[in-house]
Image (tube, rainbow, N blue to C red; front, side):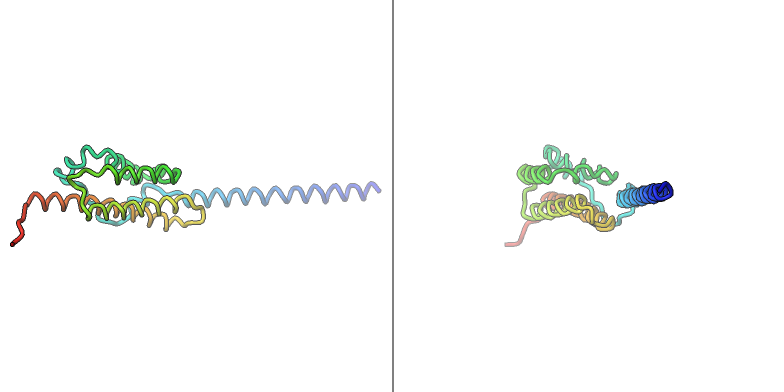
Length: 174
């Protein structure tokens, strides 16, 4: 009888001991997966795209556009791998985007610039969803970041073109 109890205790202890080993390996694998999905500054710097800045005239034109200044700051944070703005609640991003569109200075409020703003808004919302979902690969997230950088760069380019065209004051033939 004692031998039977000792045998049952031995089986019970070995089963419990085996169970904890698998949990530790699962935790280690999960931590490795999370660290492999973290986007680094070096990976962002390796993205290839044309980055257009604003000309001096364009900087003066958007100087009072507060939401543009905030977006420019957030883009700089994104380039440093600080994704907290785009990982935030969708309502905050939507509110920011709506305010951004509503506060466009009249000097640069054209259809071309509005279309670039719409493209940028779409890319920001897409990147937000890519960053919030766990089953999205790091490559897709990096591609989404690249699309946001390109959309912002295209907005800057369009602002520069509009102001350059006005500065040249080319008259159309009658």
